[in-house]
Length: 143
Image 1 (cartoon, helix red, strand yellow):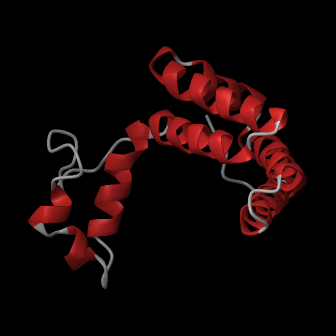
Image 2 (cartoon, rainbow, N blue to C red):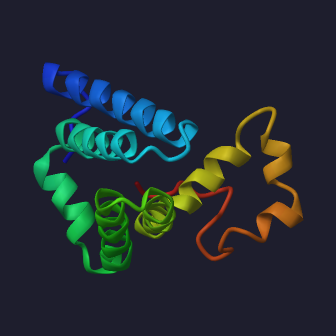
């Protein structure tokens, strides 16, 4: 079970996540500079590992239902290291969407309950993007 107390290790992990996002964005803004994107990926993965723990990180990436997303993320990471950052970022993005696909219904419920943008996400055209059998407004989603 994940504890919600802030320790020094979690603070360092959150800092590494922030620096990882910053380096990745800097690499994208500099026309997919391979070194910045690679450093950003390394910092991001190490930050997630420090924040939620080694075992929780391994459980996320090794689960049977997350295999496609984990493999796609790994292929993207290798492509970035080999010098193809644009193709690697596309693979990584697809891998992250597949890896966290079980979390999107929870995000949809959260977005519908927000005061300003909630009305937009309650529209029927936006509602079609989320699976109907998993998104219920009245029920609490298990996390």
